[in-house]
Image (cartoon, rainbow, N blue to C red; front, side, top):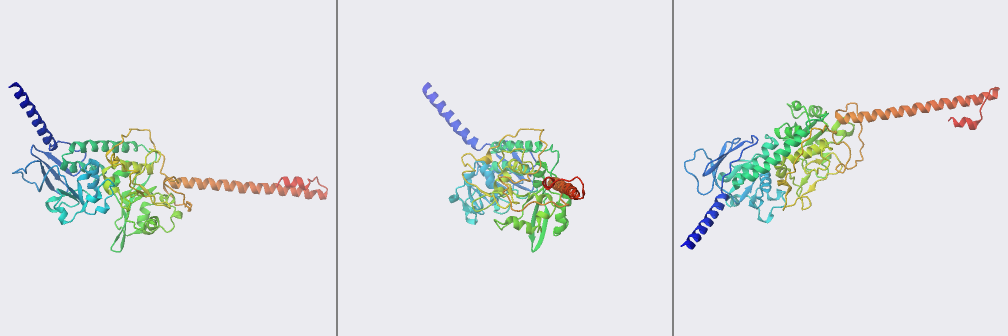
Length: 472
């Protein structure tokens, strides 16, 4: 009897254990939000509600059976989901960072996904037939795929951290909130730490995020002052006057005047002439003679983009991984503005467009390890208050190949680079004037000596020609 009781107890414990695992797989962990990302999570015993407060849509998530009598829920999903479709690249980045890349089975444009760790043979095109085979579709529109579509933010109205915190929203569909909370906390800590470290610069650089667009044949020149771009520039210690943003974006002269004080610009124009995109950029923005323009960022060729890191077919990785890791994006921008802050940092997304070469980097096993992906590994930042800045990177480096064109300074040069160029030119002029003065002084002395030699013919005390030549 005792043996039977012990066996029964052991079996019961095993059953409870198995039940605990099952419940653990579908547990609802309550987490907090660090920013105001545009969504909320409400936990109940039997379900959780994700509310997209921007699009005003409520999603209900449950484990076993759909709850009854819950008002206001627009769509219900059984979780954890096992098959996901994506129509926006940021969704793929979130899945990769969470360790759920294998759940991605369909995409709007599979060939545009840049994650080399995805099994391309298993990812189908997200048409109406494949839509039926996935549990959820992450899209830019909550209505794109009927009851299966869930909206993720794709514009830049959110700050970098607000946008990145949507990883918790995606994680809720896998009951993986704790992992996402831990990862985001590390990202947030690193981002805020680097931000604080760059707020003691002795001289803040001027920077603008810009874009050219063709609106039905009418050019449009824009200074981008969305929350995402403004936060990154401010976090890197830069300043600008975005109040100069134009009412008439078609006025090229006003646009050029508005950004002429920039030490560097970051461009997000859709450029298509690969290998000649620098020339294409100068043409679109009306700079026919940039090296004689007297404009600081043109003289130093500090024109940057965020599409250095690409797939082998040239698709930018930034929308897929960059939005997930704002701390790394901020470090990239800091490495451009203040290169001595962290000399060991390797830029991932920042591409120097101002040079002769477009040094894009294709994602491969040499720079991305699928077994230990850097997208989910955060290096801790050390707080410091001693960094006062070094100035923008205006010299040629390993990322800035030598150019046959030489920088020339004009009287209208502005910013820190203009001051440096002006000082160099001033010193050069001083040296030249000194040499010219010395030449005329020696010439005067030589003529005097020769005159003395000539005077010897008239009974004066003269010198010989050999001595006279010594004074030449």
